[in-house]
Amino acid sequence: MSGMLDSGDLLTTDSGETITVDRLLGSGGQGEVYRVGLPDGTVKALKWYYPDSATPQQRRVVEDLVTRDFDDDRFLWPTAFVSAGADRFGYLMDVRPDRFRGLPELFRRTVSTSFRALLTACLYTVEAYQALHSKGIAYRDISWGNIFFDPATGEVLVCDNDNAVVEGDQSGISGTMGFMAPELVRGDAGAQPGTQSDLHSLSVLLFMFLMNHHPLKGARELAIHCLDENAERKLYGREPLFVFHPTYTDNRPDPGEHSTVLALWPLVPPSLQALFVQNFTVGLADPSARVRESQWRDALRAVRDAVVECATCGRENMTEPGASTPGTCWKDGSALVLPPRLVVTTPPPRAERHIMLGRAARIHLHHLSPEPSRHDYSEESLVAELVEHPQKPGRYGLANRSSAPWTGTRSDGTTQQVVPGQTVPLRAGLALELVGGARAEVRAR
Image (cartoon, rainbow, N blue to C red; front, side, top):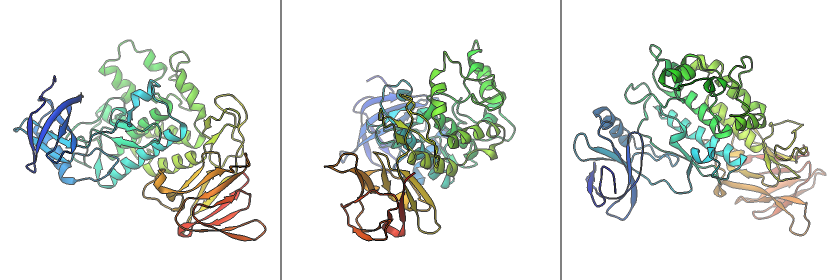
């Protein structure tokens, strides 16, 4: 093992528990991460700081984070402080499961995913940071290096949480260049990293999730001969310009160098495009104009529910929620056909959810809530799903996957009970009384 710690080294947590170093897992800008064992056989990860990062200020930040005991399965949060002297310390956290992959793998296209999974990952990321902000904690270093996602499900894990501090605390770092808010890059008087600057970093991250590209890197970056610190401060702070700015076009992506973002941007529905434009135009200059987490959450959920499959090639396509003309498939250019949609009306305060009933359509518990605290697309939250008739290909029904019966009313006024596990044929005008007082209606388009 080549690292600061050796296999077999014994360390002690702040609670007096002895841990045994197993092996080095990796290293980063602030320290190294080791696999360690606890006396009860539990395996954890230990982040151990480099000497130049093991400052009294960083020690105080980590000790405070451990004390806060922020319990959220979307974060690999520090669970115990570990020290071997005043300037040798680190912290324990859970081990990241192998199914979670980093964004660089997405950018290199070494992982296979889908639009639904990417939109889910974006939605889960937004809600994760929203949960952190609701506790009065600013992350301050949102970037592609601190988020991992499951390409199959879209689940996310936020790592390297040792830079998060109470809103208003001036200790710690300001962020990663390229994700830092322009006012922090410029060093404006009074500008401090916090939840407002987090909103800028979050928008950059969402853009990179969906576009595989940075929102401010276009023709201007290509014209820079030496991308040194001064050039970066100009690009991200003094003169930032969105690559798809509606008025100023001198930072457009280059067709030869930036073909991916040029191909992907037209696939993003207008409602999502509008939020990116807002954040990377007026939001660059005015922090109060930045898109809030709740705006991202509502837009991402609606677009995810509006994903449809091409009838010709089967590929997923994002469509504008509520649109009557879905456009053409990005893969084969054939005209998309909108399937029926399920319009769910939640209990008071009433809200509508529109779910396209394509081949992979599913309804989850959060669809039945007017203001869900957290979206969950897992099997455990499944309420209903579209299924094909086993003997009649092309005929579909809605299967009850909840634990309670529904009441279905057909267009002719007749009713039927739909018990758990039963499927009701999909017909326009079908109305359903679902669990928890939610109602749903099948509409042709």
